[in-house]
Amino acid sequence: MTTSPARPVPTPAKFAVIGAGMAGIACARTLVQAGHEVTVFESEAAPGGRMASESTSFGRFDSGAQYFTVRDPRFELALQTVPGVCRRWSANLVRVLDPHGRVAEAALPSLESHWVAQPGMDALVVQWAKPLGERVVTGATVVQIEADALAPRRWQLRTESEGGAAGVHSGFDGVLLAVPPARARLLLSRGTVSEPIARSIAKVQASPCWTLMIAFPQASQPTMAHLGPQWNVARSTHHRVAWLARESSKPGRDPIER
Image (cartoon, rainbow, N blue to C red; front, side, top):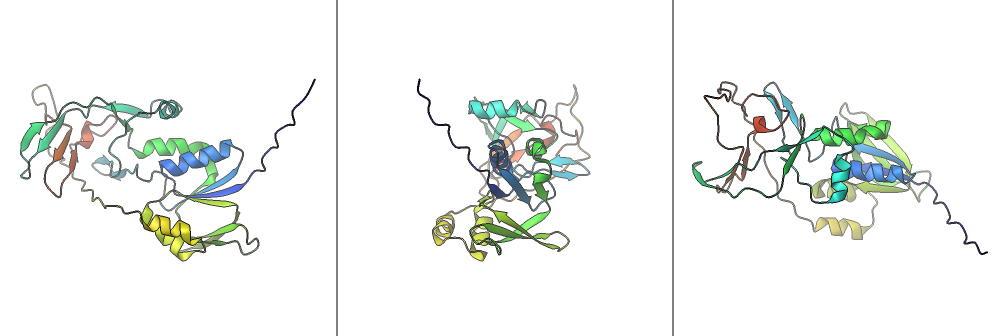
């Protein structure tokens, strides 16, 4: 009888993840499940990233991603870990508006379900971040990545809090950036990161998108006699307006028209 040598158990490493959006949280959880030590740094007060939501006196607005689709079975399984957080949104009632805001045509119904988290899009990322607990450091903006002062083969991060307090977090075997390209370029330009990585990110171009959030608190609420707007989503042919969504039509939202 022959036996094969046992596989060596990998030594746990210490990682820093910058950015607590969907990518950053998914990365951190994967590393933790593999037995590594992870700290996530997020400049905002809570996880969310591009799945951002804003709370106002008129209700919540999804200022980032408006919805998501489920095309990968693995993503579908991931959603099942947070039952009740996500629901389908009837965004199939799509209208196309001309440059003057008039309805030009009705778009064909989408064959894919549109999903949203409730009460806001950030709820999904917040729930996924909960198992990480204190590994997620919020309100800490990473301002520099540099070689560890005591262990040059490792990395350390310099951070600033909203109140201006500075911090140094050291001893990382690796640093992962889960932030927009412009933010990544800024961090890499300030640190001692290899030039090939910085050059690769410098080639990435991103187009900005402005979000305007408007509420209509005096608008009549939809009833059997008054159905309200006959669409939940509109795409515009105006060169400055691409997308309009009725936040109040999403599941789990406040009823004020917005």
